[in-house]
Structure formats: C-alpha cells, structure tokens
Image (cartoon, rainbow, N blue to C red; front, top):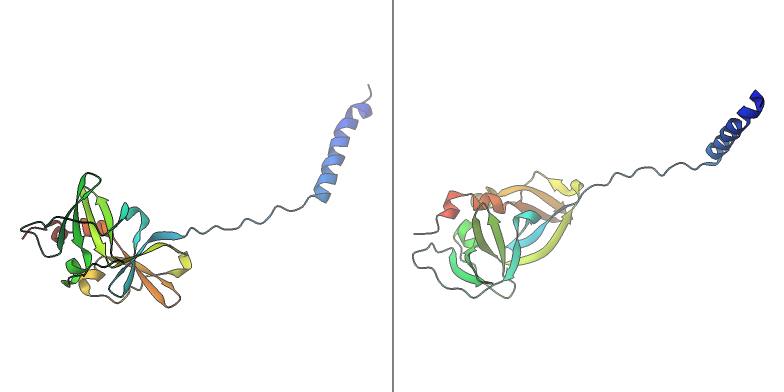
Length: 181
C-alpha cells in the first residue's frame, strides 16, 4: 500500500469535519436562570408578610381548641390535630397586645423548629408567593418595634411591600417560649 492510499481515509475525515464546521449552527446562548424566592404570604392587620417556605410545615383552618389555664393572653389554647396536641398562639396579640378576632379568613401557620411545635393565628393566608431577585429590598415595611425585630428583608411588587417574617427567629425567642403567666 502506498502512503497516499493510507492517508486517503484520514483526509476524507478531515474534509468531512471541515464541511460540518462550515454548515454547523451556533449553540444557543446560555440563559442565566434566576431562582425565585418563595414563601407563604399572610396578612396581620393591614401588613402583608411572607414566611420562608421552609419555616411553615402546615396551614390549618382555625381549629376548635381547649383553653390553657395560667397562660398568657396570646395563647389561644391547645388543639388536637390528627392526634397531636398543638399549642395555638395569636401572633397579632403576641406582637402588639391587640387581640385578634378570628373570622372565616383566619388561618393557623404551623411551625416546627428545634422542638418548638406551635400554631400561629394570622388574619389571612394569601397563598404561595414567588419573588424575583430584582424585587428584593433591605427596606422593611413600616411596623412596630416588636414586629420589626422578626423581619429580615422585604420585597416590592408594584405598590405592595412584603416583609419577610422569620418564624424560626420567633420560635427561638425566650419571650415566645414563656407562655405561662
């Protein structure tokens, strides 16, 4: 076999590669995917707040419950939820001393953090909320000092200002853990 005959298949492959490169389309540009921040939206009074999705384990309608004697006024009672006793706390009353009046919109956000298993009564649950990174702000919604201490950051969506409420920080607060009078 001659040298020219041995190089012929290699040359054919080179020619084929050149043709493919000449007619190849560019790969699509990689689009940067931005992760939305997600949380459970809820209302306390007129404030729109959102709790990080991993801070809330369940959302309940306002349950029937038994009163707990010798407890602070913001402790609404103990509810039996599928065989588990769940202490129910009025978040509005805990934060600013104003007793919330449960209505058909009231819901209970269940928190389970470091052994603190409790339900927090809120005025209304506004559903799962998605926020883009561009909507994030370090500005906090105007709130009293008790509430502001649990706000981490916020989001602007149009004219609405959402504060991010840390359920975990609440569950670690000594005052919250002292429910007895």
